[in-house]
Structure formats: structure tokens, C-alpha cells
Length: 398
Image 1 (spheres, one colour):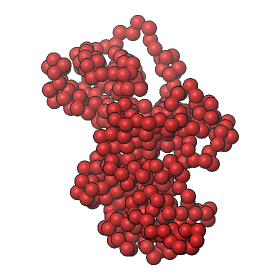
Image 2 (image 1 turned 90 degrees about the vertical axis):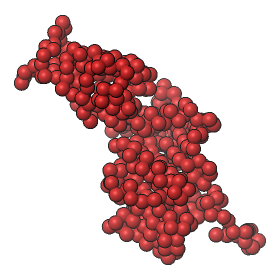
Image 3 (image 1 turned 90 degrees about the horizontal axis):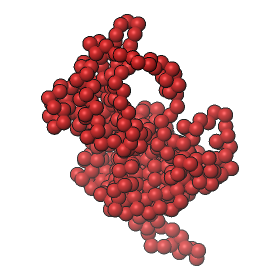
Image 4 (image 1 turned 45 degrees about the vertical axis):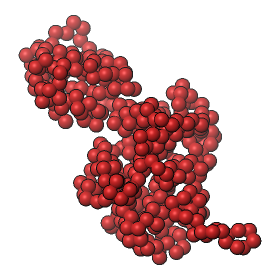
């Protein structure tokens, strides 16, 4: 690929997998509105880190900032220039897979000459690069066939929506075979989720951290994180502050204000998907007020009733809770022994609470979310190997 000078002569050809070459490649791609794609600086910064030394590169940015366009362009570019490229795209669901596949396929269909470089197979959610024999293939996050490939550039879309990190870890574990890279793009997730725990941990432990307005770049231990967010939760109604977390130029304080004022916009959605702050979405089955109204003063639960325990892990930014559900009769169930731990929470605080509840109510099992962390703690308790359980037996249920 060469770029013409003003006098009509040509520059020396650009080298693949450099930021100048990628930018020039993107200028040829036609968007669905008929214009050509001019990637923004924040998108180019993400791509530049993909071409650099780190193995894992994440971009966490609010909705509407061109994540799908960027991921589709990166997929086509890599497959077009990497011999025998394998670009698996992991999405949280089949519906999400179709969106990304359609965007990449749309680039091929709309851009002159791209049909000579790619073949799009909609039914198989696959795109083949004809010059390099490379392949772009979309997988749902729970698709077990994803472990039968050797990727050169796995792409994880909307990582916060993935049920767990199994596919991520499977693909990450195979990168060294071909010197591959891994890219993940997402918005904020649920507080206490594995995704958010990794996000927080990397920002806290990165050896190189730079901040510019609403953007934080954290690099170290083979990973780069580009994180766009409103840093102060008190600023979520300040449209100038929210704009700093939304780098796409077409998003302005004025468009943000109209979006915020919509009668369909909830505060929880605004915080999570526009301000990029980890937030639990509203819509719980029972509101806190309804729970409070069910409280019985001086309740003495029956310790001999059939019981099952529950453990809700929060760790760093959300509370941790534990308790038991007692089935006293067909018309009466009691939640008892509830213990709330404020974040940050350590394992040394959790285990004694579980032991006390197990001794008191002898639940037949414990329900917990394996995606919220603590798997090693639970496994040790379940097998009787935890040093703090004092011989008390547990049965954990996923």
C-alpha cells in the first residue's frame, strides 16, 4: 500500500502492522452511510498497542463509540495481511455474533475491490481472506468448538456480557503457538463480576499508568487497558465530564443531555453504559423496600428446618452477603442468619461466617455464582482442605 505525495509521486510503501498502514487501510473501507471510515485517535491508539509488544489489549468504552466498527476493521485487516490468519471472534450470544459478522461483511460488500480479497459466508458466520488463506470465524462464548483452533488474533466482543472467562482463557493459552495477540472490547459490567475484578486489579497493579481526562491507559504484565469512564461518580450528571468518557467526536454534551433527559433512560443504565461505571442494573424481582417490609422482629428461626445456604461475593466494590433459606412449611420460608460484609472483603472474613452458618443451620448445600471469584476458596471448603473450616463439611452448588 502506497500513499501519493502532493506532487503525484508515491511515498515508499507502508509496512503492514504499523499504525500508518492500518490508518490508510481503514480509509478505503466504506461505512453503511456511504462514507469512508476515518478511524479516531482513540481507535488508532488501541490498534497501535495491538501491533506492539503486549499480548492482551482491552478497550473499555461506553456504548455508541464505534466498538463494533473498530473490531470489524481490525479483524479484516489482520486476516488480509497475516498468512494463514485465524481470527476467532467471541461474542456473548448468537445475536451479538450476527451484529459483528454483518458489520465486517458489510465492509466487504460496500468497499470497491474487497470482494477480490474476501468471501463472506453468512450462513457459517465466516469470512475468508483469499490472498492469505486467513479466516474470520464467529463463536458464541459458550460454543465448545472454540477450543479446537490455534488463533493469531482472537477478538472478544462485549466481554462484560460473557458468562465466564473460559473461552478467553482457552484462546489466551494458545497465543504463544503462533505469537498471537488478543483484543477485548466492552462497556462496564456488574459490580463484583470477574470482568470488573480484572479491570480494577489491572488498573491497580499496572506498571505504566497514564491519565488524560476520562481516559486511563494501564500497561504491564503483558496487558494494556484503555479505559474510558467518568472517574468520579458524583459527576455523572455533568455533561462535560461525561463527554470526556465518550471519545467519539459526534457525541457532544448536547447529545448527551438529550439522551439523559429521555423518559426511557434510567440512572443505572446511564451510569453503566454511558459513564462506563460498574453498576448493577435496576429491575430486581423484589425491591429493598419490599424486603424490609417482610422483616419479623424477634424472629427465632427453626434450626432443624430444611435449609440451603447462599453466598453472594462482591470483594472490592460491592458488598458480600451470606445467609440461609429455611423451609419451615409449604407456606412459610424464612431467610435467616444474613451477614453483610462491606467492601473490600477478604477471604479471612468470609470463611468464619460460612462456618458459623453451617454449624447453626446445617444447610444441605450452598448456592453461589462461580463467575464472581472465590472458586479456589469454595473448592477448598468443598473438599475439606481449607485451613479455617475446622472440620465443618460443605456442599457447594453452582
